[in-house]
Amino acid sequence: DIVMTQSPLSLSVTPGEPASISCRSSQSLLHGNGDNYLHWYLQKPGQSPQVLIYLGSQRASGVPDRFSASGSGTDFTLKISRVEAEDVGVYYCMAALQTPLFGQGTKLEIK
Amino acid sequence: QMQLVQSGPEVKKPGTSMKISCKASGITFVRSAIQWLRQARGQRPEWMGWIVVGSGKTKYAEKFQERLTITRDMSTSTVYMELSSLKSEDTAVYYCAAEIGDLGFDPWGQGTLVIVSS
Image (cartoon, rainbow over all chains, first blue to last red):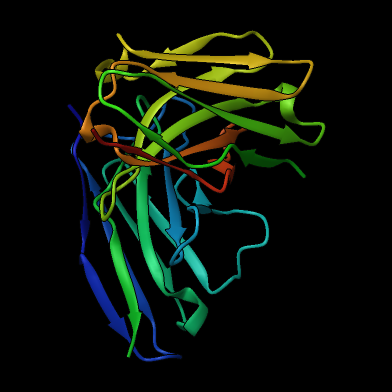
């Protein structure tokens, strides 16, 4: 079975500073069509998850451009160029090539 | 823009069944696949299954294969998720979410808390 591993599991960031989250899959998420079937979600406190990034690096509609993502195959990274207070919550990567599977989550807090 | 509104919280006895609804608004409903996920307190979301709205085709996660049924009612733009033989470990917030193409799950319903307790 595929295993999704995120790091770090928690992050405390000063507003205006950058943040980076890593997601590693035990199996390649690169499809034959060239897309990486890896999505990023943010679950703000008390809310449903919301999509930030789809197919590895594509920002979802309405997502601020301070969010970016990269990676291919088994290693992916989500970056926030300048963290804002509204970015607090738990960030999940999700493998979408076969059965959807989430990573453990990374909790982002503001210092 | 599609919106998903789920039915309210439930308390169930072990061994019984639950059925949650997810009502969609917006013209993209028929082009979507509606996912069902659940999230126990403090845990990551867990995917349970989906239904392709247009065809009615379903796919279930292996662990739920025997007791999960997802259906849809096109006349009311509503998708239903029924889980039988409930156990205390089924206590969780249950979410529906739409997927159109490969754009990720968007939007999500507001979640439905289900407590299974004797």
